[in-house]
Image 1 (cartoon, one colour):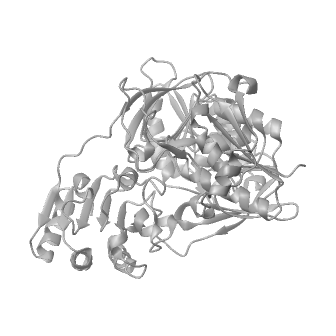
Image 2: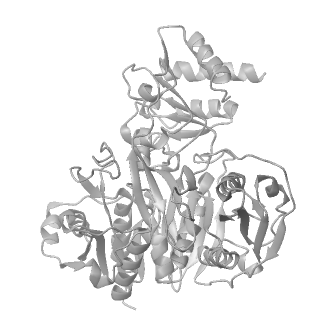
Image 3: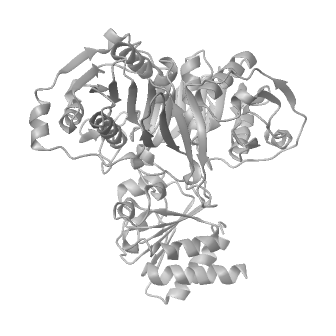
Length: 259
Length: 324
């Protein structure tokens, strides 16, 4: 098998962005916001590059289902050191997690990577869907929320983080799908040389229909609203510490009834 | 409606999230509907205690091949149970296991899926469509979705969203279903337990969190001491994590954990938008900060403008006195 890593990335608004409902009340107006690589996807790119440097991969391919106008995120991955970029053109499509996972499964069939990487979830819809669904459709094992990858002969050892700081340690045979968590590594910065090289790297845009996109969605966004506003709280200041603390504890017991 | 619940277990014991999910399933199923649960594993405990939360039928995929967790085989068992029982929808908890298994189930069945929802009701158009609400952008906005299609709709529910309500208990019809053969491509070889006995941040009912003003890893000790008295779990802001005062597993916010406790105590946290996004749905918020203009006070129910290093020990003393 060709030793290839396929890293799936998604453009998302920056974490500091103010998000508001669109004028129709049934969308999020993100067009004007600065987009970055989904933060978790950066850990996925970094891990693929680190493993390539250790000789585990010959090529790192980065792919995104997005509008070509957002190609900056793929170019950034190339500047970090990935070898080739693919954009599956999402212009004018209306898809749910299932149809996107099906498109990526077609890309996996075409590219035959030994490992598919992605971030554990995207920070826009926070779903944690596509990687795992892709694994099922492409019939690959999936391990998500991964904090450590140890390559080996025959099988790889993968650490997955679950609740209470516990870890599940798996042995998995390749090919497989790995979802990166923040604790996996520290993504490298891009430098000028990388940015210049990125411009010369192979880059293709594929029409979604070419990968069999069924432009259908069984999940329809009906409404987007701001979270309910809270009435102003009770603020204590300029009093002795013990008194303020006593008042708050009393409110937590009598009014909030949470302690 | 016929609602199937994925009954999550660890080492054969059903987790408390099952009570919450069953409560929701019971209300979703309605008077003419039915609620079944699917449990996958080996050496499963009796499910009798789940009947008061609405479990009527237990589909049990029990066998050595399922003794340790494997997303591939567990998803296979859940999907097969949904098809054979004729589920209209499948509910589970938005826990690490639920969020792992359910997308695979949805992909296998060709289902509409929504994860980490805070409410789920029957769709307005009748039939078996569902309407769910879920926080987007870690809670900066809330989305309402309709799930449709002929395959069972798949939904994971955020822990602590709706309280579990016990009603009258009945008898449970237990049916054995086939346990899938092991899939050797993926093997869980070890579970590494943390030394902490505390509830996970995402399931904690009380959280006490610290920001960069804690100033050092050692100073987080005052939060831990206070948390011990409160039965709370300690969290941290991204600023504190980036400064190396706390591990990433403790981070609350958009690139950390989204939490939903009954009480969130923010100590020396200014309230950056990405932090607020991760904790604003907490039922009650207490903010302790020297800066009266800190944004955290805008969403706090109770605020104390003072130095956390004075307030937190005083709080601990007061709580200790109440406990006696």
